View 1: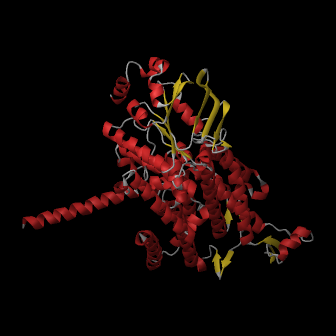
View 2 (view 1 turned 180 degrees about the vertical axis):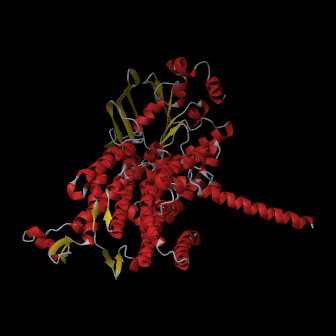
View 3 (view 1 turned 135 degrees about the vertical axis):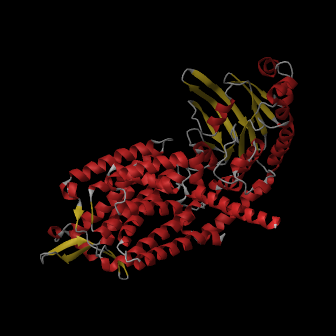
Length: 362
Length: 262
């Protein structure tokens, strides 16, 4: 039982190390940059797995939550609050190190929010918005959440595109590094590339372990029950609306957290992150990994996003994600990994029985 | 003071009056049956009592508190559990996991405790498993614990659903046609099981067409016809009620039972 739980953890850790060593040996260490980004995107997909594969709800707005996380963090850490210096609240925030004075490019003094405080603010804002959207949509049975989140995503996209202080079409750049703790800095500098790659791997692995714990628990069973038969789940005493809302808010928080990390890593964020196509892309990736299998989804989505970020799909980028979605739904709705595993097992047992047959004949 | 008291409950669907001023009560420890022709409103009544449908008028009292207007999960948490006409198992789960879900209203660990596998959560999980196995044993299916629910036959699904309902530790159990789709042997076993459930102190209210089963196990019977109570009383009284014979039981009990089995 314990071994079964530990196996994917050890496998993922080993894979992460092997990839880093391999990239180093091949002299392609710069691959790790896109891999790190792909891993952050995979965190969005992991959250969607919880929502889609377990609670049985679809969100077409996770790009918007990613953007809310990223933009909140970007705005707070790049804005100068020094004109409020003398106000009471600024002084109070300064005292608890939420606001810190910093030297700007031209030698002047600016007052900005620390990345940690911005992260907390991003999480709180996401929590509020997710509750506001999820509460009415999830009291109903059916696909209302997908519609509500799609509308929400379009609105957020238009707002970031049309708002000057959010950088309009250019987005926000110059987002500072995030000094996480103990010398670990979230930053895209090549000097800390390997460190950042492992930080992203560790974060993803940690979240995967939490998700795996969750799905094999009372809460996970309740979500699955809602997914399977909502009426029966309610008749057993499961508060279906609340469980769906909790799963939705949790997955929105994961998307926003990924947005915060990636924004610090790439030092900026643009409006395309909030586009509906991005949201559909996450849904496609969750489906491609097998919605009820966060491990598979994390793996497949990291791989496909890496290829996309390396420019493999060229101008057909979005078309590839659409094709992946269609293929998965028509060929392997449970995700490709389970059928693949069964196929390999059959192949192995076939080879074994063939070998056994020869042995008997000789 | 009855365990369940239904007063003056009506429910209409558009122009169709499914329930018209229905009143009845169930005392603690009873096995009570609701019978009547198809379309009499039996399942609607069960759905209204268990909170899946709301009543248009009337009041429903359960264990000293009003439950009309409550959501189905609140009623279930209050100690009422039910099964469905078509066994509604969670087919993505194993048999054991299905019954483990039944422990939901009697356990507490939430998202945070489950994510972090806190010590209390691990202990609770173990208790959930043990209790679920016990309930599976009670219906005689502990050997199937690891099987996928989808692999079970119809009769076995019924029993797993019953175990799941019992796992919520109800004081009132609602069964919607528990014998439909079962063969004679399975139906006899079911009757025995319902009696054993009563020995555990659980009150049962069932909707059923199988008259041999109903007459065998019921303490009290409510006959519904066109959404209104036609008669209420002990099996012997109902069997000899001319009105009931005319609209439902017909020429003989054997015929009614036979038509259900065919």
